[in-house]
Length: 201
Image: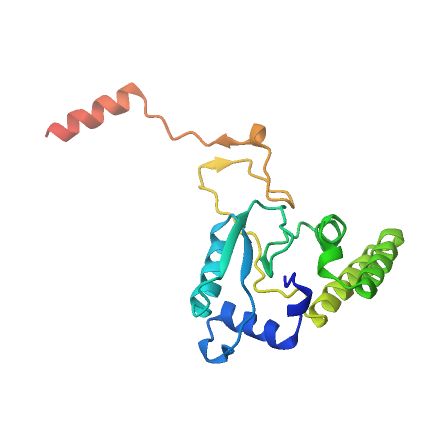
């Protein structure tokens, strides 16, 4: 997310995209990003390091780490994640309505437009129409050079075969009270005695 209004240009966005993709041939001579915030997870830290190595000619480039769901005002670029749950509406709508710094990120005209779109989404009763409106807003933010997607991936979990009753909901959570571990086959004392006797001979 390019949070500095003066940096919301096609050139800056292309330079950032090139940095995240590791394309060093696209680096601009003058790059005006000096402060970056990133979430406290491995992936966002790696993206932050990529920016630093990509634009290492700026010794004043500073990074600040924040927790998921926390946002800093007054930085040039924010590297953050939007966790899409079982539908776009709940997660992206929550981000659009709860992000606290739109006033410093958007112009007055952009703020008015965003509020109109949020109101339209809020009163829309059709789920498919809500998702279409959300997609439109996200595309609009990208066209305005404010927000763009670096990476998208689904949640994948692997569970040992011995654990049974695992049902993951849309948020990636499981009811632990319903889990059980399939017991291993227990050998009887007679079988164990016979096996140990055979092993001697």
